[in-house]
Length: 326
Image (cartoon, rainbow, N blue to C red; front, side, top):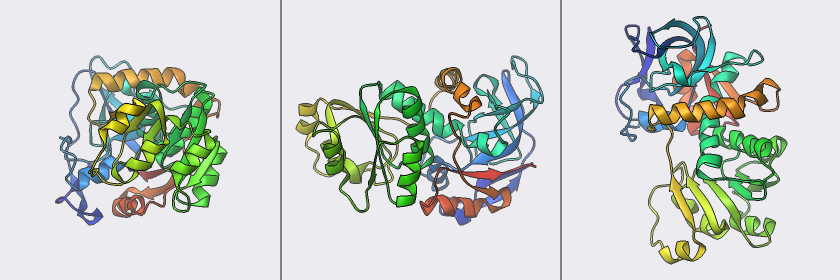
């Protein structure tokens, strides 16, 4: 089978196709003929050699496709249309997945739409509810509202709570789209000081929960934006990793709960439990078309380098998809 590996750590030009033997299954696993995969920031970090937690030489952490083989203990039918997280190996014609985290694809979704769901919706669900503890009477600040996780988080907050949703993005197009998904207050971070706008929208109280993809460059403004006893969940470092001259007293005075998380290196058990809760509480909304898989662009598998370049240009609105097999 053909799959994508990294020649050496670096830019998109280091992505190349290589022939591999078909994967071997262990107990409880299924073999999927991959119809579509998706590009994630973690793939770029891995391509650059910065992650330190990817054992699989083949990139890609989520797929959609058809089950073509199953091992003992895998309780799913051959021929089933499934989507879900894989432990690497998603940029390939075939991929292995633990059966207990495979999600059946609703009939109303294409393989391309299905591939846009697992990583971003599970990340957003984990961040909002398992770590952020968002409830009905609270306010949430979702940065990068036009990203895959951002568009998922806005929808989840809107459909599962009555929370007030504030989001940031860098263009009118992205902000208009965020508003269409349910965001109440939309801030253009390129033209406005988002912390001032947040305080204005919350009667100077701040927000209860922050979903922070940015990191270092947003430190001060996030600290200004968060409410006393607020939960600040760091899930990305697009704005850098080092914060200079942190005054810890500011965290103490506001009693801020600062949490960091990455989904990809989590244990199989954690991903299984997260997937099961997501399927129970959210998948019915996809069946009723009350939740949308947001696809920005679909690239042919052969254009993997262009797909990575598109993500690094930060122009995508939603997910970037690879069409692997017809």
